[in-house]
Image (cartoon, rainbow, N blue to C red; front, side, top):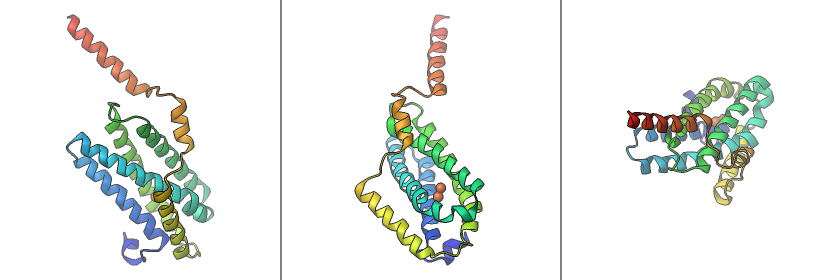
Length: 190
Ligand SMILES: [Fe+2]
Ligand SMILES: [Fe+2]
């Protein structure tokens, strides 16, 4: 993308695009990873990156551009963040013992790739037309990133929602496990 070459590193849009490249590279590494240990390390790293990126966008970048970009596009972006946050909360709540962990992360990565595409094709071109100090906005983004890395990431409503479900399993995953058990029994009975 052109912006990556022409904008200074401290420009708010450069910071957003750089974050996108970082998570996409992690998704690629996940696809190529051969062991569960490697995949888990990548999942942990990607979840931290995604949480920090979502926070700096929701707290700083989105409010600065919302009016210019328009309600419809921005509301859709909000909902995409929400879905990602739910999947992230579920991945945080369960570890490798969840037989759907890699699949859940794969779906998260696909959702995020789609969101990144929309952000880069629809949101950012409109945001760029804004007459604001993108360098000052960039400093705010970087400052908040540092703060989150130092002090930790605050919990969100989606983590609370998932915690409230008290470990009840996802409906389709639970059904898959149940039917797997049944057909095993069935096969053994014949
Ligand atoms: Fe976003
Ligand atoms: Fe983004």
